[in-house]
Length: 101
Image (cartoon, rainbow, N blue to C red; front, top):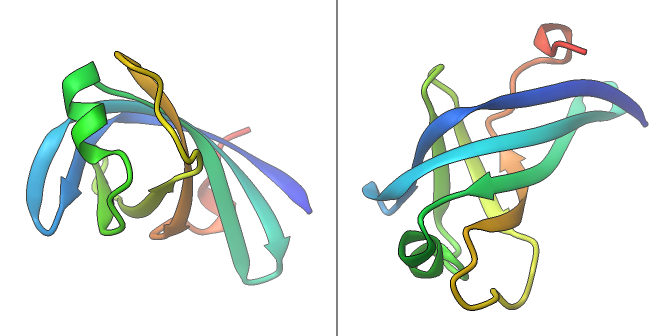
């Protein structure tokens, strides 16, 4: 497994095509297999919007740079008034050669 770098930016969390709120994110990417990239990291949102998004299974993070990342929350529970949560990216990551270290 090789660390590819970090993706940081802004975007919108969506569920079934509907916006759940603006977000900032920081993701670390790893090359697991020559054709498989995985990433995980943090997403920051307004507490009420994060609470509304948490636990849903159909989430997409649409970034300001045009990526559409299929995500899921890693944790089972969200603390009251939390504004940050850990996520895993399941699909939509850019190719390994485009990651910045």
